[in-house]
Length: 167
Length: 293
Ligand SMILES: [Zn+2]
Image 1 (cartoon, helix red, strand yellow):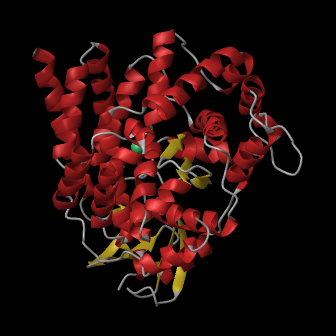
Image 2 (cartoon, rainbow over the protein chains, first blue to last red):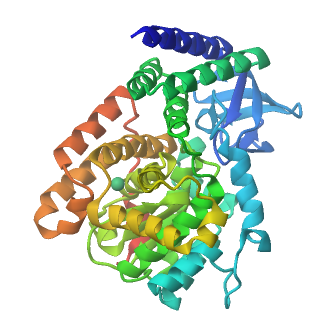
């Protein structure tokens, strides 16, 4: 078990490199979207809207809130549930963005169908092969297209005193 | 912060890990994953775990392909479970709860969409790329929003942990299919159909492995708790399902062994120090589902 030792040594090295590095300064927005506020309560005004993956520099921590500075130089408070110490979602971030961008275009092979945006070409052809009804195709199509604005989710969280709106 | 040089070291480490993996030491990879996890570095554990898929000789399935796979599986779920229940307000409510949980889950960068299946059985399914389904029967057994959040958290967990993609990845390996991009799916509809049919069979008929179910229970209750829902609601819910066991066979085929699941949830709550917030939101659940179930 020679290379087991070597391997564990590498691992310890990596963990050390990461934890040493993780101390103090940088956090990432880990929520899909998040608000930066002028104070450490959800009642304080929003000074910036942040997106997942954005880098933040820690100024100060206070219980459930962290004071940070954004890359654009805006300072404010963010709810600790919205940040993480490691960059979220890894390498699929760019792919995901790419996927979204191409999804509704000819390039991704989306077919047009009545009233809806259309299933992917491959799943449409699968639906033909296995005989999925139009009604069921439309249901999945609507599900795919279904969007809820971020503000509506924030309103919902607020009404339930959830997330950063907790007391 | 992870500065340039430590990031470089990290990459070097990964390459070395990959080399170790190439020598065929799945056991070592497991040990490394465990070591990273017990040192509290969940993300590193995942990286090592994900690296294993790469080392397995195939590129991991990318997000664009995942969307096509998810959509095809979703078509079968809808077809086999009586179609989607046409209740826009209730569907919106389920989406608001689900998306609130997904907002801060471990894979918050993709879209999650939720639909209700018009079926009396008690069940829930998650297809890749965030296509999540709950049956009308399941909603009927739920008493408050915290229970719903945990159930949706469990399904979101199947997506964040890429459980179905893992099943597909393995089946591709068995079939000796070396490449599977969107182009592949379009050029080889027969092979694509086989891949989807296999995944649907696993999801709807056989059920995922116990290990994957327990992992989803673990991350699901963490996700729901992160938003502020009381994690003990999930215990209450699982306990209620256990007493219903006689009535509904299908669910227990796809989601077996309740005592094991309950103890996993209990130990997750205590080990992760999840806060018993008392937030159940029974009124909002009742109001939103009133008359629609
Ligand atoms: Zn499950």
